[in-house]
Image 1 (spheres, helix red, strand yellow):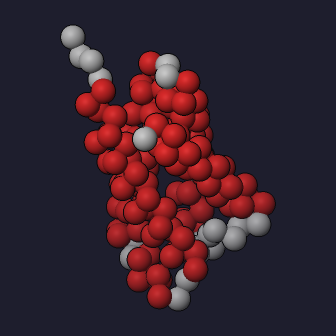
Image 2: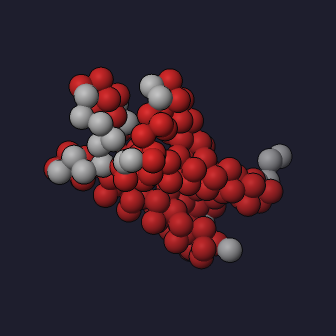
Length: 134
């Protein structure tokens, strides 16, 4: 199971990095071009970088059987849930989900929201029982 979780953690970090490279270079992932939207999105790179670093460290640690792998994978899980909830809340408040029928970018956003929440919860469910809390 550690191999599968590690592959997903590394894939998560890669997709996150891809998202931000695309966001700043081509803007292809922008759901809309309005200033208020891009200002909100620009608040996320530092938090996404933190999640990505935790995901990579978690994956390496899980693959090598190091204790830090469990800790960083759980930190990545928590960050994924937080980031997913922030996106979902923003998208609901600004009625962006209504664009899903006509926007490939919004479809990708929905995928990212579902993945972040689902994988974050799954990571915690899989890894929490391994914690030895004295």
